[in-house]
Length: 154
Image 1 (cartoon, rainbow, N blue to C red):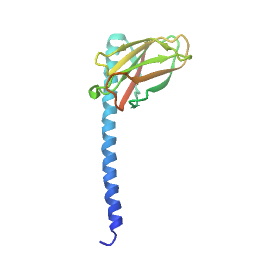
Image 2: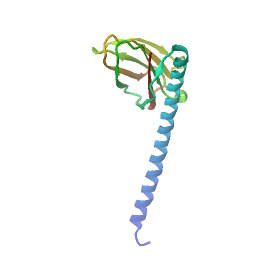
Image 3: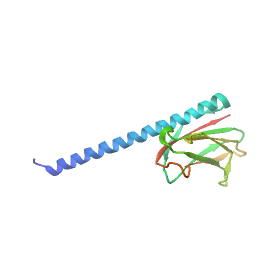
Image 4: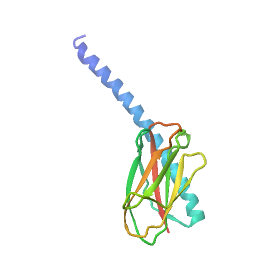
């Protein structure tokens, strides 16, 4: 063997690539499942509540020890329905709220019975940037997972 250290480096590099590719695939599957769950919540509200949902879906990670804050522009006069979900089979239970300009919770929450998602209903009194906060519930299974959010209005 003319270059054993080079072969060892190549072998370790290949193992590292395989490991990280597998990890990315798992997270991509979680994001797809979270998005599908959020869109299922949206479909129900389109049919039953008359909401029109935006085509884009926000997806991101939801760490077990830290929540997420997502800023969004909301307009006075619209009724909003915001669907938030994690993968249904993750076992993670989530909760959240819309925060106004002073950081106070506004609107109402309708959680999914199994805890994997919720709907937020809110009609702003002023046009502006609001924040949707999402966190994993205390006392429930906690793990890093993907989360998706979809916004509807009428």
